[in-house]
Length: 242
Image (cartoon, rainbow, N blue to C red):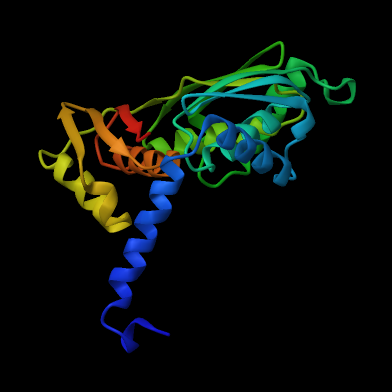
């Protein structure tokens, strides 16, 4: 049956969504732990047997030793997909398998080559520093997406145990109506995301406050704020509803 066949179908649909939301909100820590473990098991990029999961009041603590940094990022992303997660404490260490170890010089060379082949990364404006497998990125770019793409380009390189992104954004004029532009962007993405969210702008710094329903929604709003012209800093104080 389509919505065109009955006037009450839309309201029934939204009541169902509301009921599902209430069930998610009622998850116990034990239920949430099972869901997180199931999600890790489901993800082919993760060796779930190496990840310990503990949950307290909706906050998930992850412990263990992983073979590479890419897997650590995959674990974090997988947990963020689970409904009911209010926070994540990432206490995972990367201990490279002997076959994955590379010299700092080799890692730096690989990083620079990855930038050279990446259309969204201004390679000539980014400096790569590697110490004991840990990459630090420095430099100045025009947009946050360039900074994020640079980090993503090196996460999966063999031998990497961590990444620190110290790339800054080039100063540019911030429009007077940047707060309205951010709210408009949220409305375009999903109307619910713009409700109850406070956007405060001071010069080139944006502060986000309010409550959201999930980590995915929190990330979406954060990304929308970074896409606004002239923004150099975004303080994300959004909380996931219990």
